[in-house]
Image 1 (cartoon, helix red, strand yellow):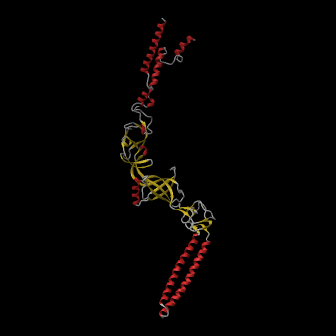
Image 2 (image 1 turned 90 degrees about the vertical axis):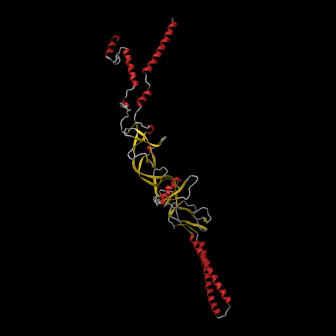
Image 3 (image 1 turned 135 degrees about the vertical axis):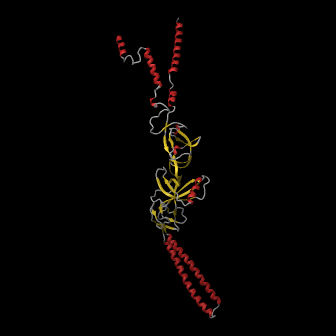
Length: 432
């Protein structure tokens, strides 16, 4: 008997489990599937821009380095003791300003010696010329031999040649005296001093007295790909003055605006680039030698172009395309041909017209023919029916039906729980 009750209990348990499984399969819900069913056809919120007509500058971006047009290592041209230095480190100097002085006394003495030798030879020449005139008269009178006259003429020519040498020696001595004053060969800024007064300087010294760099005007050297060189050369041949702008390393501050000066005469085979030079006035000293800068070379400007934001451009299996917004709030894949690009806008050569609307935000959730919700168009709605926010929750409905069945089975009706209803209170009073 006990064994029979055990078997009946097991059978009853299995029956309860089977019934519960059937009930769940009939009344239970699958939230993911339901959510997918209710989410199907929901318009995707997107950002929209309109194709407009405008100008697109053709700009070549490059990296450059500030380079002075002239850099001079100032050295002595004579040998001697450096008596004084007449400049301060970092000072701006003009061409011809005195920078330093080498002891001039030895060269003053050499100049006096050269002048003395010149004066001696001048006296000898005058005496030889007087004798020559006397010999000519004597030869005319047939008083002396003709050979003596020829010898005197040769002596005069020797003294004349000696005077030429003497004049060169005097000029050289004067030049050495001039070299004792070291002057600025260009206008620019002096760097740090490398030689102090009192040192003995020579022409063969490896160390210069100072370095002068021209900073007004100043240039920027940068490279561009060889594929863009023909366009730049055509503009230069046409006489165009191409504008060049330079920005700092962070590309936030514009440092200067100048003009393209020239390009190199050869392409670098290792990099496939060509070097260009732009010149800037640099009146405010914004550009510093060897400074790293970002270069923007304005080659040309495309006028009356159809432009859209760069964010609208997509690339995939169809090629380069945009999502074109249609009148029924759906999108269409439209293949386009791109032209010049400038920062956040791009020229559309083919595929769009002025006034067409394209999607610029939310493109990752779109497909051809998808329905969209325009900016400011209210809450998203399904393809048909009320807004998603008002749709009933199937899980909540199933839970309410289960509670209603339990109340009916307990005799509670369809109202509130017995403890809160008047009938429930009356039924509970006899039990108190």
